Length: 144
Length: 149
Image (tube, rainbow over all chains, first blue to last red; front, side, top):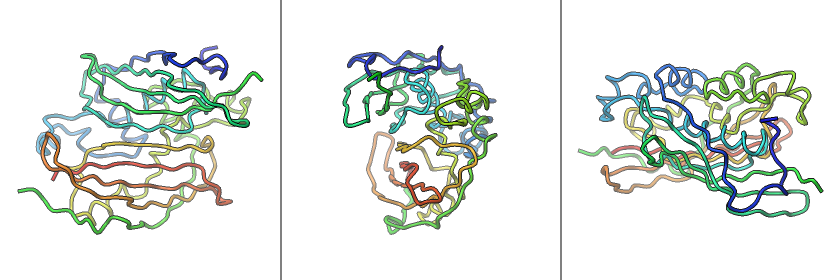
């Protein structure tokens, strides 16, 4: 089952987070994300506002790309496993861009009942430029 | 001419606010991302899960807004047209579920200026601690807002 997640024992350092391809980004998704998130900054909706703000055109909410990366993480680790997730927004995502989300296992540790996996995670556009970079910690169930 | 921002905002606490997690809002948020995961979308799958209900996607706490940071931007002496999102971090102590009521306490942890390749910028670090009715911590939310000066 796709959403079953995985056990701590089945993860090795160096494992790749299954890449998730999102987009091409359309205006309607930015409008929808504004409604769902409560972030109504017109810079994501109104090309004239974005131009006057010196940004050229509208661009995607950074949080939408972080949401994509969160989806890649939960697809890979299982829902409800992410306990720390931090990113830097490195470049803007524009309309028609494609965003590919992935990551890599950096370390594993167990203490008492907590089985933690540390990952580096990132999202890149269709030109291979990193748009989001960050780290995540997931707590996985153990077979033991 | 670059604008001046008010660095006295550093350390300032903003009024705590209460939010109640709505079931439909979790589903709407997952749909807006385009995430079909049934643990975020399907009540029956949620009910049968180890959490006994739907759980929110990992970035859902970004919806715990009060006034869109309007008061903070005014206090800083700027407006939304100059703002970019620099960084974001969530610490999640347990999954967020529908019907739960939380207290959110925001504060400005830091304000500093730096000149980057696109000119002078201010960085505002905002941290919000989210607790439940029994005062147990549910999440911390840390965001860095970049202001183009």
